[in-house]
Length: 266
Image 1 (spheres, helix red, strand yellow):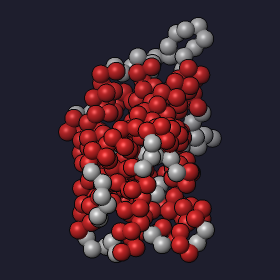
Image 2 (spheres, rainbow, N blue to C red):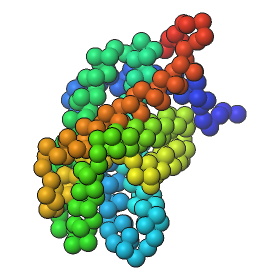
Image 3 (cartoon, helix red, strand yellow):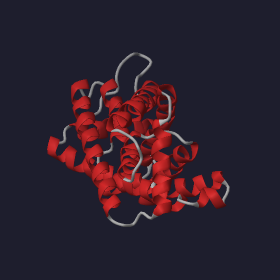
Image 4 (cartoon, rainbow, N blue to C red):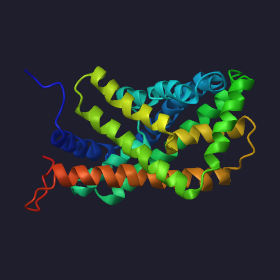
């Protein structure tokens, strides 16, 4: 009987292969799929705002946050199952770099173009939804409040929240790679991503939607504030959590043999 999931060492080898394939994409493909991912994550963020727009005033804040967190993971489900390129998930490409199957320059090229594409997709969605007429006063108030709270964080707060966020995001991506059916992938993605939203951690791509949306809807926030006070420290944190901590531990534990020989991806 075939297993319905892969073991952690098998997932590690799978992600080395995935990382190699992702860095071989043409730039135009990276950009197009990254724009999709920015839009997909924005859909999840949009749903979060809609469901929590007034719940905090009439319902326990923790429960209201959980309800918003429960719908947010639709974004990453679309990314993984439908197919798109997400910067935070692609931080796992570093495991292929550690195993010397991918060069640092190829990984950075992927990260740069995917990050740019994610930003473009997020901005497009935020601006079009602002024009759509779907956002009434309660939604606008909620969106502005979210944006203002995110740029009020100190550098260290944004950095730490970014680290923990992407530990959970890449663990979601890690686990889904071990699932052999769609239901398994959905559950693998839902729980960790729900948890990072519920916990108040910071996701750079989600913030590419949340904060510009608040600005478009009237928040007194400049583009320099968006980058300096949130996106830059959160992105650094995301890289530490998703490209350093998780990949290194799993690579060293499951791939790098004690006799100091690499397990080649072949």
